[in-house]
Every structure is written in C-alpha cells, then in structure tokens.
Amino acid sequence: MGESQDSRPSGGLSGLDVPFASYKKLAFCLLDIFKIMDILTKEKLDLHIQKAQTLIDSDAYEEAVDELNEALKIDSRDLAALYGKGCALNELGRYEEALKVLVEVLVIDSKSVMALNSIGYALDKLNRHSEAVAAFEEALKINSKDELTLQNADIAFRNFVKYCLEMIIGKK
Image (cartoon, rainbow, N blue to C red; front, side):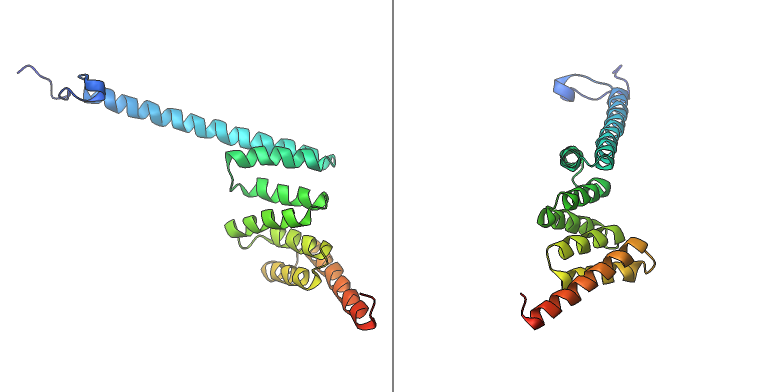
C-alpha cells in the first residue's frame, strides 16, 4: 500500500530501500567514471610513448626502453610500445631481447612489415643470416616496395653469402 512502483524491497544495497531509478543513475555514473578512466589511461599510455619517441630521437635508448616498459604496464599489447621497445633494444645491441619483443608484435599483428624488418635486422646481427633473409622475404611478401626492408634484405643476403663463403674456405 502506498509503495511506489519505482522501489524495491529491502535487501538491495546494504539492506537499504533504494528506488530503482537510483540504481540506474548509479550505473550511468559508474559508466561515465569508467569512460573517464579509459581516456586518462590512454592519455597516460600515449604520454609514455611520446616521451620514449623523444628519447629514441636523441639516441637515449636505455631511457626509452624504461619509458616503454611503463607504457606496457598500462597496456601489455600496445603495438607502438612493443615495436618501439624492440627497435630500442636493437639499437642497444640487445638482439635476443629485441627478438622476443618483436615476436610479440607479430602475435598481435602477423602482417607487420616493420616488425618483420626489425626481426630480420636482429637475426642478421646475431649472425643468423638465413633466418634474417627469411624474415625479410616474409616482409617483402606483404609489401614488396618497402625500401628499408629491401635495403636490409640486401645486406642480410650479402652477409649470408659472405658467411657461406667463409665456411667453404675454412675461415669459420
């Protein structure tokens, strides 16, 4: 009697009588809060990536890796952060680490010419020339006109031929 259609029986939130409209308002408020949190999180992620790019541009690769690690704490699958970290590790000569990170990029985006190119570069530096050539070939299947990949593939192929010749004449 006298009970409104917009209320629920006791036992709702902490046993309080809370009108349904209040639940609805609370739900919308929470959605707004989550949207704001997502925006702030994305902005924080982007800020770390921008700082890392500035550090990379000034050859501060170790600091860039640190900044990208912070970005990856926010989103462990962010392609820009992963790729940037892989490239910075390559620049530091930490090729095995770079490979692990760049393979993560391929898990997310199997058609990433940039990741395949960077993988080929790391493999070539590790004297894994035939694997490097294969990575560059895969990248060129995706984009046969990518200039950087064409240049790096040529270098890796020459290194592979040189390595084979050295094996034949007994220098290795």
